Image (cartoon, rainbow, N blue to C red; front, side, top):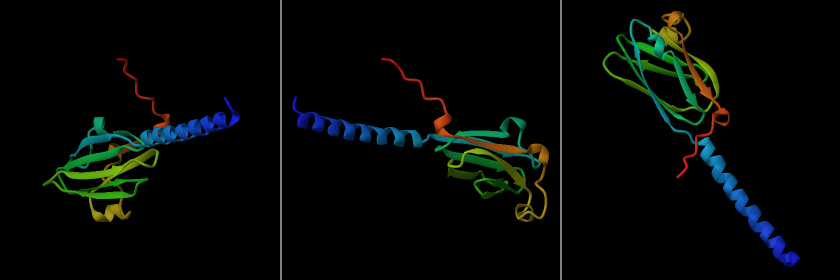
Length: 143
């Protein structure tokens, strides 16, 4: 083969590798959808619902219900949402920031504005978003 042919093959191979690299990086940054149904009763969330785990890039849907008016505050994302007893309140967002973030339950708008403490520190919740690059790769299926 001539050096011109080898040079063209290298260029073509480099272009293909670049396109494949873009496709892989796009697939890695896109997440799935994760849903949690969460119930607030007497200002508390049951112990088995106090840790919300997601992966960066996931579309997160938190479905809140409550026995009295409350405000949910997800720190780190600065999301505040009013929850009323009459309906399920959905909080939908894409998990972009990684780390552990507190989720506070407030009983009134004054509490959410920082004038009073959350309803019950014993019901502290944590939102944990793990980096997609740190997540284990999905298992490949053999045919």
